[in-house]
Every structure is written in C-alpha cells, then in structure tokens.
Amino acid sequence: MNKLTELYVKASIKVQEMIRNEKGSQTLEWIGIAAVVVIVVGIISTAFSNNNEFGNKVVEKFNSLIGQIGGN
Image (tube, rainbow, N blue to C red; front, side, top):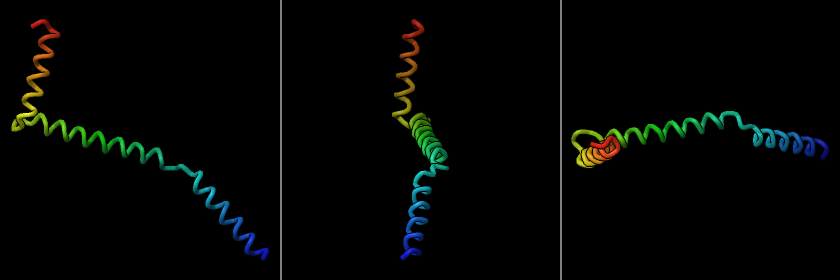
C-alpha cells in the first residue's frame, strides 16, 4: 500500500507541475495574433484589388473623406 501511495503522490505532483507550466503559451498567443493579421491583410488586399467593385467604392469613399478634410 505504501508503494501505491508513493506512486499517487508522484503522479499528482507531476500533473500539478504540468498544469502550472505555461511555457509556450505566449508564443501561441502571438501566433494567433499573427494569423489574424494575415487574414485581415488578405481580406483588405482582396477588397482593394482592381477587379473588385466593393474595393473601388471604398477607395472612392476614402478619397472623398480625405478631400473633405483637406478642404477640396
């Protein structure tokens, strides 16, 4: 029975160490952020391509807003 208790204690300590270990979690967060940025850049580049009507309308709207700011 003593061996079983010792084995249980060692296993529970090991599990607790694994739970507390957060190595790599920040790396995964940065990878997730980078993936979102890549997706957003892809969407924006698709929206602003020359063959896209939506992109042309957005560019026209930005140009008119910039013209209003500049007083043109």
